[in-house]
Image (cartoon, rainbow, N blue to C red; front, top):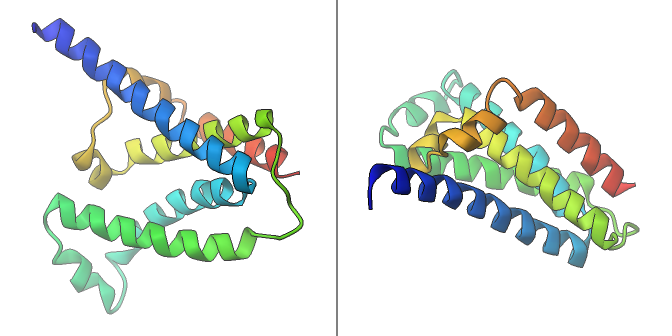
Length: 161
């Protein structure tokens, strides 16, 4: 396999991973409503904010600084994401919101996936775990990140109501 074939396959693999995540979130949204998709979309940027703030924290800062390998830093991000997901889910979940229609579930899945990819690209710790190719970086990178996040949050608000 030459370099061009490898680059083409790698970029296609990125889009396949993104599509699989979007389909899984859409199925969950169709099954149980948009609360989990909304919680994921709100928790991912919150975990990034918490991770960035952790280095200056009074007691946890030295502990976070001792985690030097990318895997441990990604695990810390995962713990922060899990904690923030739990809290946001508890704040946003309500029993009266039923399962949305198919179009709204697809919209929820696409919106939550857009937030995940946009935040993943801007998080160096996660880039060490999986580095998206230049195609995905150009679509979800710094130039369009704001628009992806705004569109995703508008879409999630629409799907919720």
